[in-house]
Length: 264
Image (cartoon, rainbow, N blue to C red; front, side):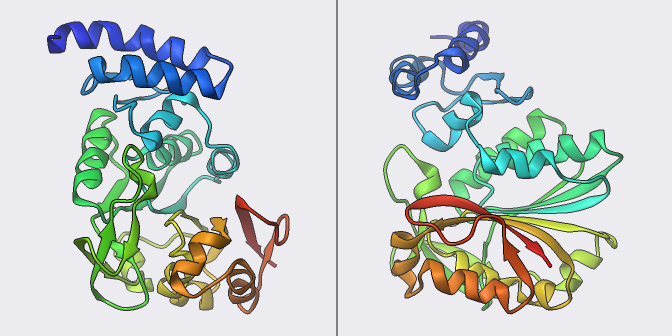
């Protein structure tokens, strides 16, 4: 199929996808139709376009509009804030944050994505939306600076990639106050962390910001099974943030969920 034909068909297909009520049938529709439209641009459920890669779960949920707690967190950002997106993937949450901040008078996004292939898609989607306030970094966030390995995880879900003992070499390092100050002084910093079990090490990587009290709120993916890959668990994640004065919105749960922490 030519790129012109793909581009002509992608918008109505995206409209159909986001209006299918059942997640099961949305996924089935995406698997059947998506391969024919890959590489075209279409409107997401959040009102901005992205490159179509519907076979990939992390891409499809932007077109479906199923970010849930993370979406609510981003849409509550105040104006002139800094949003740090750790595990930015193909850019849906970073772009949503930039557009939310612009509507409220401005702000900035720092997007961190370690996978070279996924980072390239992030850059394409930023350019497609002419985002001027997103600064992207091809690195993992960690307490130590150096190299790590990234396991691609489940095929068809770039969001399942995780730090591992083997795989693709990636850069890693902490985020410190100097990294932020070179872009300006932000009264409020809000952080999203979705790193497939590496969340506690990421928190250690932003510890300087937590100690300084610069982070107002965080939304963190919590999955005890994934945290155990790195010798951690959900309780230790909550305890780590509590020592810096961050309280949870829900409290410790079982299973896989997103938790919002705020500075008391």
